[in-house]
Image 1 (cartoon, rainbow, N blue to C red):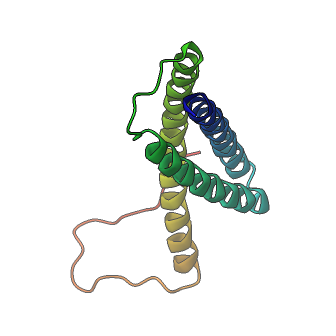
Image 2 (tube, rainbow, N blue to C red):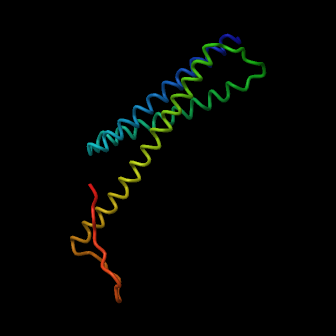
Image 3 (cartoon, helix red, strand yellow):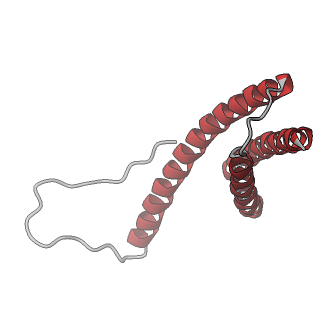
Length: 142
Protein backbone atom coordinates (compact mmCIF):
# COMPACT_ATOMS: atom_id res chain seq x y z
CA UNK A 1 0.00 0.00 0.00
CA UNK A 2 2.73 2.46 0.98
CA UNK A 3 4.77 1.56 -2.13
CA UNK A 4 1.73 2.19 -4.34
CA UNK A 5 1.16 5.58 -2.67
CA UNK A 6 4.81 6.54 -3.17
CA UNK A 7 4.63 5.48 -6.81
CA UNK A 8 1.41 7.46 -7.31
CA UNK A 9 2.94 10.52 -5.67
CA UNK A 10 6.05 10.21 -7.86
CA UNK A 11 3.94 9.93 -11.01
CA UNK A 12 1.92 13.00 -9.98
CA UNK A 13 5.12 14.93 -9.24
CA UNK A 14 6.45 14.05 -12.69
CA UNK A 15 3.14 15.14 -14.22
CA UNK A 16 3.34 18.40 -12.26
CA UNK A 17 6.85 19.00 -13.62
CA UNK A 18 5.69 18.28 -17.17
CA UNK A 19 2.75 20.70 -16.83
CA UNK A 20 5.07 23.45 -15.52
CA UNK A 21 7.36 22.95 -18.51
CA UNK A 22 4.42 22.99 -20.95
CA UNK A 23 3.13 26.20 -19.38
CA UNK A 24 6.56 27.81 -19.78
CA UNK A 25 6.57 26.77 -23.44
CA UNK A 26 3.12 28.33 -23.90
CA UNK A 27 4.24 31.60 -22.31
CA UNK A 28 7.18 31.76 -24.72
CA UNK A 29 4.86 30.92 -27.61
CA UNK A 30 2.46 33.70 -26.59
CA UNK A 31 5.26 36.27 -26.35
CA UNK A 32 6.55 35.19 -29.76
CA UNK A 33 3.04 35.46 -31.23
CA UNK A 34 2.70 38.96 -29.79
CA UNK A 35 5.99 40.02 -31.32
CA UNK A 36 4.80 38.75 -34.73
CA UNK A 37 1.28 40.18 -34.34
CA UNK A 38 -0.13 36.68 -34.81
CA UNK A 39 -3.49 37.00 -33.08
CA UNK A 40 -4.78 33.47 -33.82
CA UNK A 41 -1.63 31.89 -32.37
CA UNK A 42 -1.80 34.19 -29.33
CA UNK A 43 -5.43 33.25 -28.72
CA UNK A 44 -4.60 29.54 -29.08
CA UNK A 45 -1.69 29.89 -26.65
CA UNK A 46 -3.88 31.70 -24.11
CA UNK A 47 -6.47 28.92 -24.34
CA UNK A 48 -3.72 26.35 -23.79
CA UNK A 49 -2.39 28.36 -20.82
CA UNK A 50 -5.85 28.36 -19.24
CA UNK A 51 -6.20 24.61 -19.75
CA UNK A 52 -2.74 23.93 -18.31
CA UNK A 53 -3.55 26.19 -15.37
CA UNK A 54 -6.72 24.22 -14.64
CA UNK A 55 -4.76 20.97 -14.83
CA UNK A 56 -2.11 22.34 -12.46
CA UNK A 57 -4.72 23.42 -9.92
CA UNK A 58 -6.42 20.03 -10.08
CA UNK A 59 -3.11 18.20 -9.73
CA UNK A 60 -2.03 20.44 -6.85
CA UNK A 61 -5.29 19.60 -5.07
CA UNK A 62 -4.66 15.88 -5.61
CA UNK A 63 -1.06 16.14 -4.40
CA UNK A 64 -2.16 18.13 -1.37
CA UNK A 65 -4.75 15.52 -0.47
CA UNK A 66 -2.22 12.71 -0.96
CA UNK A 67 0.36 14.45 1.23
CA UNK A 68 -1.89 14.21 4.30
CA UNK A 69 -1.80 10.47 5.00
CA UNK A 70 -2.22 9.14 8.49
CA UNK A 71 1.15 7.38 8.23
CA UNK A 72 4.56 8.86 7.35
CA UNK A 73 5.71 8.50 3.75
CA UNK A 74 9.13 6.91 3.30
CA UNK A 75 11.81 9.12 1.78
CA UNK A 76 12.63 8.34 -1.83
CA UNK A 77 15.88 9.60 -3.34
CA UNK A 78 14.17 10.10 -6.70
CA UNK A 79 11.63 12.39 -5.02
CA UNK A 80 14.29 14.92 -4.09
CA UNK A 81 15.55 15.01 -7.70
CA UNK A 82 12.04 15.58 -9.04
CA UNK A 83 11.33 18.18 -6.37
CA UNK A 84 14.52 20.06 -7.29
CA UNK A 85 13.48 19.98 -10.96
CA UNK A 86 10.03 21.26 -9.97
CA UNK A 87 11.62 24.12 -8.00
CA UNK A 88 13.83 24.96 -10.99
CA UNK A 89 10.90 24.83 -13.42
CA UNK A 90 8.85 26.99 -11.04
CA UNK A 91 11.62 29.60 -10.93
CA UNK A 92 11.89 29.58 -14.71
CA UNK A 93 8.12 29.93 -14.99
CA UNK A 94 8.08 32.86 -12.55
CA UNK A 95 10.73 34.70 -14.59
CA UNK A 96 8.82 34.05 -17.82
CA UNK A 97 5.58 35.15 -16.19
CA UNK A 98 7.19 38.44 -15.13
CA UNK A 99 8.43 39.09 -18.70
CA UNK A 100 5.00 38.14 -20.05
CA UNK A 101 3.20 40.51 -17.67
CA UNK A 102 5.55 43.38 -18.56
CA UNK A 103 4.96 42.72 -22.25
CA UNK A 104 1.19 42.63 -21.77
CA UNK A 105 1.25 45.85 -19.75
CA UNK A 106 3.35 47.57 -22.41
CA UNK A 107 1.07 46.27 -25.17
CA UNK A 108 -2.04 47.46 -23.32
CA UNK A 109 -0.61 50.97 -22.96
CA UNK A 110 0.40 50.98 -26.63
CA UNK A 111 -3.07 49.91 -27.73
CA UNK A 112 -4.69 52.59 -25.57
CA UNK A 113 -2.39 55.27 -27.00
CA UNK A 114 -3.01 54.12 -30.56
CA UNK A 115 -6.78 54.06 -30.03
CA UNK A 116 -6.64 57.59 -28.64
CA UNK A 117 -4.47 58.72 -31.53
CA UNK A 118 -6.80 57.21 -34.12
CA UNK A 119 -9.79 58.81 -32.41
CA UNK A 120 -8.11 62.21 -32.57
CA UNK A 121 -7.38 61.77 -36.29
CA UNK A 122 -11.08 61.12 -36.87
CA UNK A 123 -11.86 64.52 -35.44
CA UNK A 124 -13.25 63.19 -32.19
CA UNK A 125 -10.68 64.88 -30.00
CA UNK A 126 -12.28 66.42 -26.95
CA UNK A 127 -10.34 69.36 -25.61
CA UNK A 128 -10.78 70.95 -22.22
CA UNK A 129 -12.42 74.35 -22.27
CA UNK A 130 -10.69 77.39 -20.87
CA UNK A 131 -7.19 78.77 -21.12
CA UNK A 132 -4.38 76.30 -21.72
CA UNK A 133 -0.98 77.11 -20.24
CA UNK A 134 0.93 74.89 -22.68
CA UNK A 135 0.35 72.73 -25.72
CA UNK A 136 0.75 68.98 -25.58
CA UNK A 137 1.90 66.88 -28.50
CA UNK A 138 2.03 63.19 -29.30
CA UNK A 139 5.35 61.47 -29.58
CA UNK A 140 6.11 57.86 -30.34
CA UNK A 141 9.18 55.85 -29.54
CA UNK A 142 10.15 52.94 -31.78
